[in-house]
Amino acid sequence: MDDRGGSFVAVRRISQGLDRSNTCHSSSAEFVTGSTAWLGRGLSCVCAQRRESDARPSFDLTPAQEECLQRLQNRIDIPYDGSVPEHQDALRDLWNAAFPEEELHGLISEQWKDMGWQGKDPSTDFRGGGFISLENLLFFARNFPKSFQDLLRKQEGDRSVWEYPFAVAGVNITFMLIQMLDLEAENDSAFDLLYCITFKMMDQQWLSMRASYMDFNTVMKSTRRQLEKELLLEDIMRLEDVPSYKLLTR
Image (cartoon, helix red, strand yellow):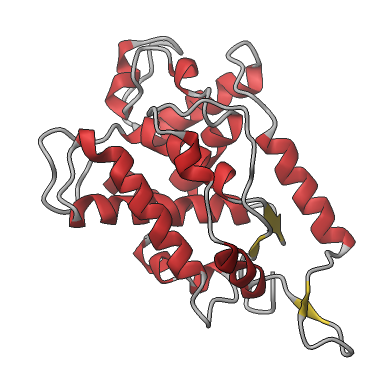
């Protein structure tokens, strides 16, 4: 964080291999390709330090940044495990954040379909994103509750008759970001904040394209292009400077 309290994420490189399956059946090759020019510009956007003797940016990480990056990598490596009490509690917390007035009958229940899971057991949808995808959804619900509810309940715009499933879309966004970026984070919530921005951006792309469920993969590709474009803007020094951050409401 800087003196303005911003959240920093630096694009280090495009991931070349991640052994995960995509919940919405997009080709992983379509997600991992990226331009060299974008990589160079992405690096210079944030987390850049300059040595006095070198006009080019230096991307050496401080020990604190290395620690944050390692914590993020550790989070990414944790699969969702329905037998772990912490994971069970997080899933219940997500339900309570999404539907505070409705009692959950069980971790395996037809109720989960109301949130946009594909079946009555959400654990089967976490293969693409792991436990961090559940953490991302929880962070979104707790930090931007209005935007979270607007997306969950499809309350903005002229919606399609056949909408994207909210929760599964959330897992796919986590998966896309993990495949798309290796991240250097200045604080532990930077990846989560980027997730919230991307989710809201995806919904805006969905509405502008007047998309329906079968268009989901096309919308995700468009979202990735828009995210790259915004991260490359000259004045982006922190995630709060990304234009789509303004779409989020608390």
